[in-house]
Length: 399
Image (cartoon, rainbow, N blue to C red; front, side):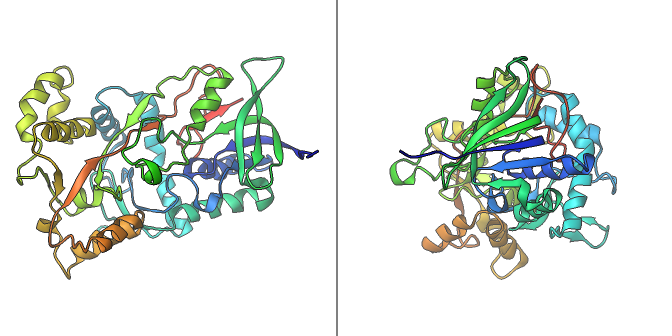
């Protein structure tokens, strides 16, 4: 007979998930609660876990309040436009006013952020993004979490599967249960407060890649929608957690397009070299140009740009092409940026280019829309207190 080991762990605060939100929540919780016992449980290892595991080449939200580049109100207006009005503006405002101070923390911890010598600010990729050398982005934040909690309070390789409810109060979560993926030890975590930062859901929708290529999806296959499953089973009302994230990416390697479009000013065309947006402008304006007039915003909403690309394909003018041959010049800084952008976060894209003998300065590369990724905008319900934690990311806190 096999005897299963059971280990009980008591905590003031339990954090489930060790990605950027979870490790950020660990540091933040320690900052505000010096004498609390804070436990973090992660099914992989916090050094390289979560959606930022391989790194990142930009920080996608930095207002630049210190340099008076933007205001919080500007950002709320942008988010309202990009999400076409389906947004909680009070929550966006709350995290936007804190995000710059978080970036300054990263800077202090050693994250290489591209400096702008003339202004003393950071190099902008776009209106809201700044460039970083981010291949060790996650490792840097994980180190801060380890120093905040101590190694003895971080449980790597522990997969949490269920939230534990109070027998006397059905609206109170008192911990969680999980198991060690290496040796099968069952962990029963008992906590006064529980922060759920377990990520969204990949492959909820059938990805293009099948068979041996099933893992070749836009978001990592280990994002198994635990944040949804555990919360639903615990009885949470899932408010604003139905967002499906679909964006343009380089084909095969899913390399992001931000640095190419925003920093290098590279356009996307149809197969004939024509603009993919203008042929559909009248139709899209007819459908979505009414209240709010989202079509004519200074920054076109992502969903509408993706929709226009799909209309092009349906019209037989695909594939879409990123015209790197127009903006990436061999032997120049633009070529260095083109390669470093992917080496910082999507190494597989450079491997694909090498395997195809592709030079971005010599020919364009195909753009596709990604597999749908189910994401949670971090809203809460009766079970959850409105406490902003985890670098103000507003991940769910249950108590």
